[in-house]
Picture 1 (tube, helix red, strand yellow):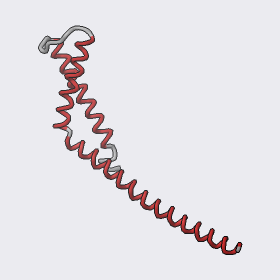
Picture 2 (cartoon, helix red, strand yellow; picture 1 turned 45 degrees about the horizontal axis):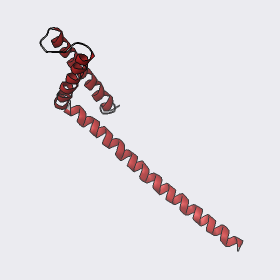
Picture 3 (tube, one colour; picture 1 turned 90 degrees about the vertical axis):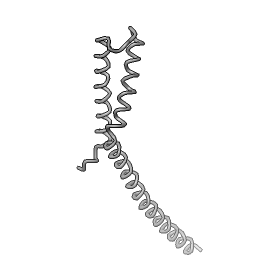
Length: 111
């Protein structure tokens, strides 16, 4: 198994972990009133939005290598599918030519 085989899973789990860590930090800051927060559901929603923004910025900076691995994995997958698709097109063309030759032979015998 190559190191890039689970790049997407690794990147996604790191993003979720980073979001969770930032959310906990924001909750602690709000609990100790180091960050002004409204009471109720709107306050929690504000904390979630702040956590999403901060973790997004952090992951953009800190997870660039993992993002590059995901990009390489996706590129390899697409290239592999293109190569298999080209082989498939050639096999279909060969089968079509064989069918046409057989059909021509049968029609020539019928006349």
